[in-house]
Image (tube, rainbow, N blue to C red; front, top):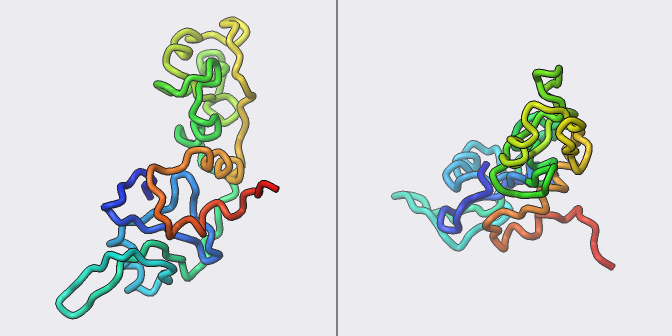
Length: 185
């Protein structure tokens, strides 16, 4: 699943059986080859097509642009604790200065002082802030995160992911993305 694809590679939006994307960030995308394989294995339904087709000696098939799984995949309720998900929770911004550049992560209470590598003790930090804070507690460094570190829900990560749309969105995908967001009056 790679949200950073170009138009010429013919990515396919993958929807769950309820027609919601499997994931918003990164957007649930397959290569057109994987999508066609899933069609022939009877694992997906084609919902929308590109104008482009592929050919074999005996078959011509329009490339799918949107597919839906035939079997519902239950979404996880507890997101994995990963560097990417920490950055997503913190909206790809340093929690000390707000910079989006050169992100790493910081243990609020340093490991050498008993801090754990958990959702509640790790925040996104730019390298300069991380170096400045070093092996100090927030009080010692006089550096406090802009928000408290917390274990996010999948819904919170999806909401944050919507703030960072992928580089490429095909028109045929738009009816299936972000339909559960609140509408302006």
